[in-house]
Image 1 (cartoon, rainbow, N blue to C red):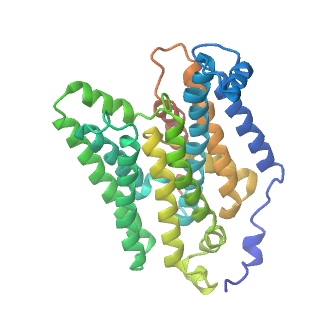
Image 2: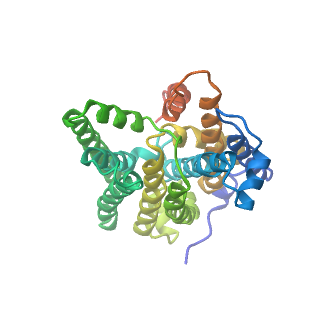
Length: 341
């Protein structure tokens, strides 16, 4: 049985009780706005009524086949990235950790690129996300094998860096060997990350995997609090560190891997969001998990709305916009932490 946390750690949190309800309302508002905003203006309530009545009007088809899936995927992918970023920063006790640190994102991208290269993307509508999920599953299996053998935090980080480098090199090799330059260009555009032209099939494919990943990562909240005092202290409090590692790695693989599989690479969200949330909830890692997930959903939805409002055609890729926001934040964070151990 896990021992109670120390009074010192318990006093680290000064959560705002209105934060989670406020974030829920913000996500709901942005989801509604995402459904309403698009290239072609139409009466959304009337289209929703047509869809409920079973009338296959053009607005109803656009609403169900394009607008709603895009909004839902924005919320789901953002929540996965924000939550995973908070878990990774808490587990590794490193403010610069992000969801890609274990190499799962790169492996998912490699799986999707392999499907592109093999020509399966054109013959099966869900081949691309299934390939991404398979790549993420392979990376998670490799990391879990190390975690099950008791490999420490540093070992997992090094393994993740190695996997990420290998997956990046193989992805570049596929691009280099692509016989059709148009196929290579399509791969590059997909790697930039986007929620455009996704369907409800993509939502149903990733939702159960993400939900399972969220549950696994949220279940490690108290262990993350204990780990902020050091691994030896956490073990003395009764936490099974091997089990914690397995839940974190598997949960991250399910949430982030399925997100990359349906949206491509959307960077910096998992790095930025926990730092925006932490001043509002305190230093205790468990207190930042749910708010980070909601804030991540809000950030991705807001960025996806922005790419549709900008006057550029074709629209900017979502991953480009999040990188333009996240890169300056990372540089500022490095300056903020300069001189610290």
